[in-house]
Image (cartoon, rainbow, N blue to C red; front, side, top):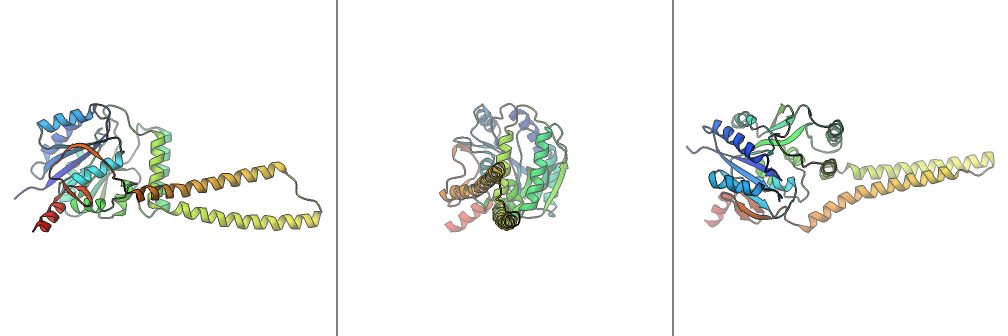
Length: 337
């Protein structure tokens, strides 16, 4: 009986300093589960400017299990994840980073949980943020709490992109081909039975993180806008509130003038109120602009990524874009018959 296939999807961006160590660790892990599954390693080079692609080609030449996709430019990690999932051919797919902050040693436990049939996905969450800056940790915690309150999806605090999924769940994720992607939210939105495994934060084995504070802030805003319309509703509520407040103040000023017989003075107060209201209006316009800009980009129907070169196994190109996997091969065979 043919063993099922496990696809290991690894987005990469300027990871030449860690790819050697990662490959060594992931091959050891693959050896430990070879009696249960066959493995393929699919690396997605997100337009790296270092020797990442050269190293991937070297690995692919000496190990037939290694495949790679190289983008024409840097499209971002979300595009890398989508490309990897689209071209993975495995019955099960595990998504992880190349910097070993997602320890491969958890893969056997994740696989056993999936093979039990009780869960469709096994995801890893950090139980602490040791080694991470306090300010960054604080804002990360606030994001998860805020997003949980205003969105319709429950993203577990400390959730990472490190997870293993069945083919059914992977296909469900790929059925959401939106341009502005927030994968953590998509994983939560599609549902399925998920088991969470906690682990302690691990430092990178080499190199530097590609996530600056500004990029994390942009990523957080994208996550909120992608799965919640509450910010838009807040604009309406604030508008109603200030209309009522201004009406009450108008009545109060009229009554006060009639009783005390003097007009209201206070130039600094007027200027302060005008500046406050102007700032509030600009803020609401900014919120509205975030939603409009995303609708604008979705309406262009641009590709999520463009591959400059690749070496993948059994990928199928269809109307829905590039996807690997038995589901699309079966679909193609049926149409040919």
